[in-house]
Length: 361
Image 1 (cartoon, helix red, strand yellow):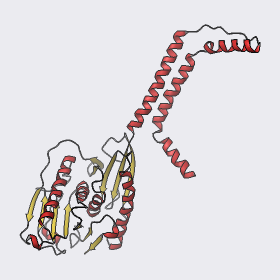
Image 2 (cartoon, one colour; image 1 turned 30 degrees about the horizontal axis):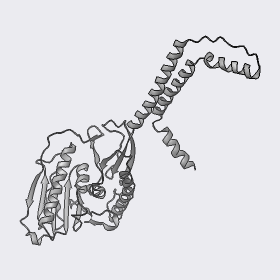
Image 3 (cartoon, one colour; image 1 turned 45 degrees about the vertical axis):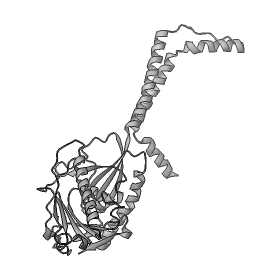
Image 4 (cartoon, one colour; image 1 turned 90 degrees about the vertical axis):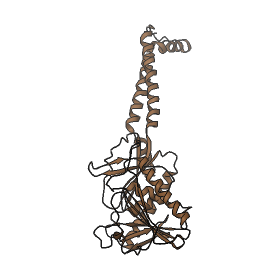
């Protein structure tokens, strides 16, 4: 019972300032209308009726009416009432709903500092906090982090299917495998608005919708190590933020596999700044997956090493098709600069933890 009362209270007090303005306008308007109809207008006939029906002798007051004051008061009152109704409709239209996916596992972060005007939105936070789970990397902790993400996905899918939700936003400060996995789990079920963390300003900055020029991804192919009929595994590297060198992949026994390397020349921090750029990179990545799907008929496993911003990791993960790519395993690895093996752990993509796998070197 108390929970229901509290929920109703939250609904009522949400945007209380808009409701207060509406009530003030309508209340003042009604008062002005009542004041316009001064007492002689309604009091004189009422007394006359009493005197006639009840045979009383109540004195009748002066029936002079200031019609200018009356008309002005009624007109102003009606105007205020109309403004109050229109303001309420406008405030309801203004308050759109945004679901913010707040994904963190590398470090704690604040989500209050945003370089965007969100006054028009009711923000609904969906938090995936894997920070404590991944302070120490072992198989148990990785499974717990994955389980936590699975639980949040169920809640998120409800919002994605809710027609009253206007936008889904992603704010990520997490390990690349879990960002990539989240994109894969959501897939292309909804459009996502991306915010990137600006280390200089200490705030979340949305990718711009402006039609800006951007650097092109260059694709380097090394298909000399295996013939198409022999390929069951291959490597895809994506170096947008930092270069990925072949020696950094040591420890995974991938040296004799064909490989594909998407990169910026040179790689750079915060390279992706616009939605158009992100979508272009995503399309190029998807085109590569389609190409290798048709070329390598015996392909069973794809190893992905990625150095890029959270929006890229999420988007590339969402580009993997449950239909076209279902016959292949996709492994995404995490970089640790202080480790002897530079990519010491990875996960096999799956919609849920029960069907996924974890590899730790």
